[in-house]
Image (tube, rainbow, N blue to C red; front, side, top):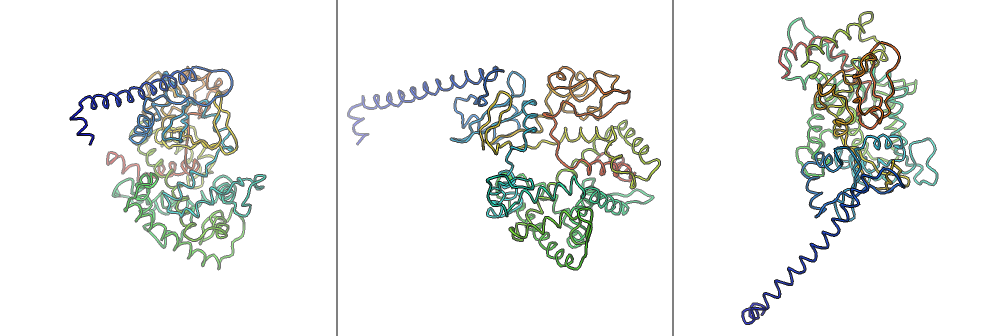
Length: 530
């Protein structure tokens, strides 16, 4: 009927077309007004430095969900860098990604410093739930215990919180604290050292020993030793391919974290979980026959460190076998997924610089000249200036993780900004680690994209030394050099710019042990880094 009317009365088509054009023009004009308003308040908020706290400004976009969402999907790190840069400096911004959903992005080093100071007020439960469900295959019903537990990590539950008998976070916090920073740390490190020495001895001959590739060698020595230190010897005895499968899983885990179905990744994860369940079953049988005393300082053939046994014992009351296996896979990823790749990258960087390699070898020789390296106290290994600097620079170069910022109890006051409770935010380590306004480049001689082992070393006689560029030291609170004439390792002023992950003590021990053993370094040098 409409076509007939248009043929008989052509003016109808003109009126209809004009009507749509009028509507489109009106909507465009209205959107332009809103865009100009957003643009005005964005610039006003970014330039304002005093006054009452306010919400971070909304990033202006004419078609927000498309202009802002597509860059996030294509390259999230590049998008975050673009959105958090104002007049060439890092800042804080609010991004509307979907109707009713906004993401707060934090890259201002002074604001990130404040975030770390109030980290006890942040909620990491959503991140843990997402990780265990998507990456580790935990059922949502089990992972929901993380979301429902609001009792905190202290010995006494947060007043008014429920589920006081289901304290998942307290159990994890206590076992990790004792195992990674408390009484259980030294026995765990010693177990790693013993296992590593045993594994590396298989490669020691008077002739050259070829390995398939250096990454496989690192997995078979460093990775296997760390697994045994954390889970005991039984797991790898039962399932010798576990470490190899794990690093295949680690390579594919980004697909799982994005929620994308990936048959190969899921198949490898299933195999790893089956291995862990088999180990748990055997460990419980063996543990029933063991008599272990000594608290967190003790180890057993079944569980390895006491803090692993502690975690499994308490998890039985509210997690099923599948959930416990998924959590163990998460523990393995948190350990091996950080220190092992970091060790590899540090080795590559050192071996590609002949002068640096010689300096490191000389320092290892000094440390172990009076005592075999296998008997050197851990404190001596972890306090060396050059090795500390190599470790720190490795993490600066290669850690690019996103860290969630979700206020748990009320609003956060961060400088001039007011952050609503339960709002979702992110800060990116990779962007912070390459901030040219913060990091010292020695007047451009060592760009932020290059590895420079001396970046974290302060020489009291050299005002150009140190990790923070001279022009930014006053702003970032960097004081004068310490008294004395010896260079020293320093991270002063980097509280909002250096976001390391991984076990520091483990890393030092790995690197020292590897460099002390001549085989891998010589083989790597001969193969030209392949």
